[in-house]
Image 1 (spheres, rainbow over the protein chains, first blue to last red):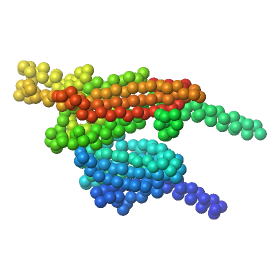
Image 2: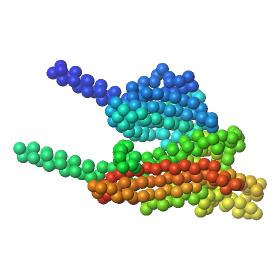
Image 3: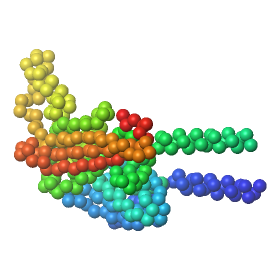
Image 4: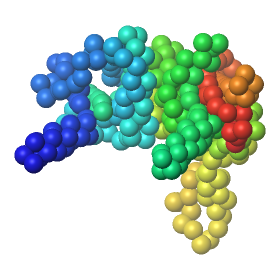
Length: 120
Length: 207
């Protein structure tokens, strides 16, 4: 009986952890301390492009083929989220086994200074 | 035993049905690399989002627009976007996302007073017809010579090709092409294309 309770607790914990998205928060100084992201995120870069817009590149490499869902949130210099109709919902990305995938994002809003990438 | 047979039959039917209705994105090559599940063989919101995002990123990374200084935003008019598919498409689903992103970039602004096929908003013309109307304070009516002509036109094409494959499958290829033309010189300052390939049963319709 006790074993069943432990098992149920573990299952609930696994389910909850699966629902909580990982987060990459890229700021001026680089990736923030609050960021927690999966090991298949292998590289994160940021720069301001020639047109003065924030540009971020995230590289993924997974040991197995998997589909991840990600959502982007652009923030202004005061931490306020900037609305962008294209990025406001989760989008699927298929990662092929052992194949590097580069996700390139460019802020269309000149006020964007930070980016948050949610992955689940 | 009877229950087992029933369960097997249900499983077989389910597998057959899901197998038939499976649609996915593909790389468009003979290798047919699966790039994830697709909602349908037609053009859906995800496709417009992906095409618009690719075009926006390409445009806002292009060095052609680097010299547009803050406060000197260029005016864009929507040109003709040809729908060369059997589907009924509101091309503003694509151009609307692009022009709103361009406006937020601080480098461009959209005019609704002139566009291919007529103004996006005819009110700019309509209010000018109130000149001489005694019911309106004439000082509040837009003066002549105040409308701003566009610097650039955004036009393009959406094309669809259906390719029959073996195993009663079909590959639907969508081709988005957009170009930005300088209306003073007629020169194309930017253009890009994006293809989206989907694969599914030939029984699935793409419209």
